[in-house]
Image 1: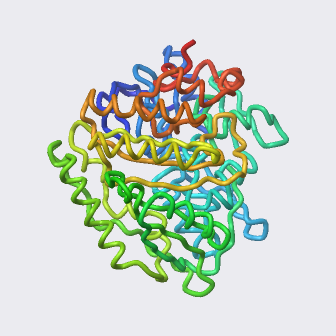
Image 2 (image 1 turned 180 degrees about the vertical axis):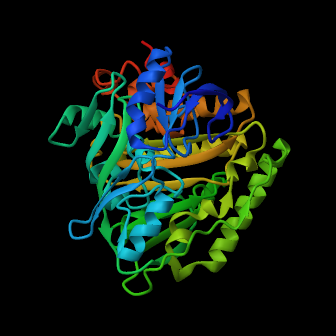
Length: 445
């Protein structure tokens, strides 16, 4: 058994929320059962965590026990012929990529950072720039191991314990502790991406570009200037790409060039600095638009070039807000959200706009659904920021959309339950010995 020790400054990636937790850090898979049972004997509710890139409170369990899985991180089996890898849940995408890329394989789905664990990716059913082609990572999971708080160890798959499998994919770690995952990979011929960057003038141009690009490109995403107004509302830079057919399989070893040594002063993130940055970034991107062959890391993980980039938002931290709205209202709802953001002056220099495809996610609580997703980081200005997000909530809810729990730290129970009508079915599979601050907040009747 690995002991639980108090940690006072256990916080979310957004740096808004922090609380004391009892934290255990096992390094071997055969320690997990005794660790979980030991925590329960101490009266602790449990939650497994990885590299803690969740922005809000889905990875927090105040007063409870955290099982830090980052030490349980070994590759267990690799079958190139079947394109399958089985690994312990604490393995990071960063480490996995170093192994599989040189063998001619890549992740079927990856979020915008490689610093996530395999278990965390499955627990949040992550999506990426290729959702219109590959859907979420849960579609590529073939089997996984789950440890329940009573010490029972189960193997889950679409055919074995299928209901619990569906609850665990995107289940935010609430059905038990994911111990290992078997996942299908995709084959690639090089560690390079044939990419193209295109500037677009407004929201209508974005939707035109997106529709055209999804037929020919595996990966699409756009950065937008969320403070643009009038005829320029929704302007931005569209990025699309495919795996290059030629080139070395030796992936670059990461693109981190600088690590933030401390939090910036909160005043550095204001409407004037963000507006100036967005305008400069747009015009510079427009000037440099075109085609290029680029390394995998720079295409998929641009934010990883700045270590601890969350410190850019200062000691008060930031809120991430990610929504999805259905196709029938995606243009009008997205425009209304951007108008509300622009009018508030509380913009973001990390604003991402993308369309999701129709491929259904396998998890009961999986976030992606067909439509348009908008993701932004808002510096935490207290009640002013909360009022803006409440306004965005109203737009999303009226449109029949929902928010991403992995990014959230403040949506109401009513907002969550409206967006996830299967939440009560999901609740049947929640392990009574596991909990999180988010679940305590959004499962209230």
